[in-house]
Length: 272
Ligand code: MF3
Ligand code: CO
Picture: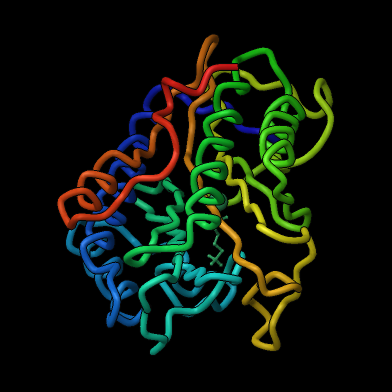
């Protein structure tokens, strides 16, 4: 069942998306060598609560954090922990904030200090593939058009697409229909209709596409232990180009203010 949101519901979702974007901008200030991932989680939880929201991942099917923490070979669903970030690491922070009964969901993969140029390129291409997917998500197109755009772009650069995890619809629940895979054929799957809210979230591996789930039942890592990157936006389907409700802008402003680098071309430069 795919829900088409009312204008009022879209407005509430916009606010939830704004909150989660500002939350990760707060987290961005703390991504540096010597900080633990638990510290990042605390920053995010307190920021969401201080702003009247609810950390939606915390307690979701027993998940123990506000953030899913994705260090290096971790693909998704890692726990915040005493792990101390080191120069050269990458760390994805995936966050869902609930506000006024609606959810905003996004993920950003940060570089900790200077990273290997090969991994810089993985971050750039993964983020760009998200915008390729967004560009393909015009009203009247199908989910498969998004999937194919992401897959084609990543594989053209020699990376592999994780199969087991997908993007999704979002609203009052953090996961609604439809599923939005990051691989597949054009022209298949549900039609994208104005008023749908979906999350697109490429999970892209430097090596092979295979993953394993750790014995904690959650942490998903690459089987070959090579790095994996993950970026996610919540978007609104419209008759034309979708509206991106979450934003990397406040995050990237913080990264630049802290002397860090931004990888990947700007969304408007990413044409067909
Ligand atoms: N934010 C994740 C997603 O993109 C979901 C997190 S699952 C949870 O779908 F259990 F950690 F909440
Ligand atoms: Co998501």
